[in-house]
View 1 (cartoon, helix red, strand yellow):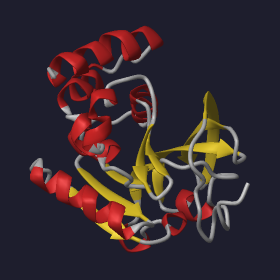
View 2 (cartoon, rainbow, N blue to C red):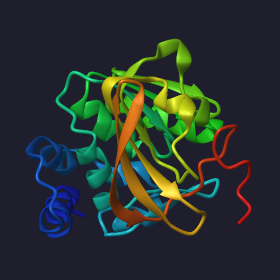
View 3 (cartoon, rainbow, N blue to C red):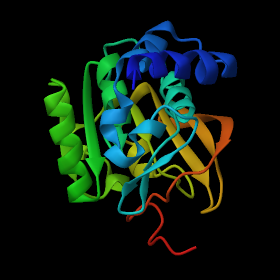
Length: 216
């Protein structure tokens, strides 16, 4: 399969028509090999407009959702970014391309190990990995200019908001188990101003400051 052609098609048919405008982001979406972040048996669907399973009940988000969440972060290339939910590592790669440094947390050790192996093989050297409860953030490395959460939360964890710099941005799906809406929070004088964006459905953000378990 011509994966480069499929990436170009993904950008021109899924992202641009839905309003993704950031040229740096579009270039990166054309570059990063999404098919390497999924199992071989679904690689032919890697650039389709859908989420795909990656094991442990987790998913790799549809390309558009990756793009819209990333665009909301307003990355310029100088940011220190915290990602909650490493998953396959695909979103991590996108962030690594567009920012200075990425700190990524995953609660499943096997997913974190697989993502680290893939990202290392692709020569990313600006990513640090942690296995643990992402709802607690990474206080030893705080503050962060940007925080991206790739799981649905009942609200924005105060622990994460506290780890944002002044003027920093957090993007997170907020809602219940069945549906959420992307929320963009910008920190100003210790408070978050919130914008509400596209509806979405993510796996639950499980942890001390998120959902306590995955039961619906």
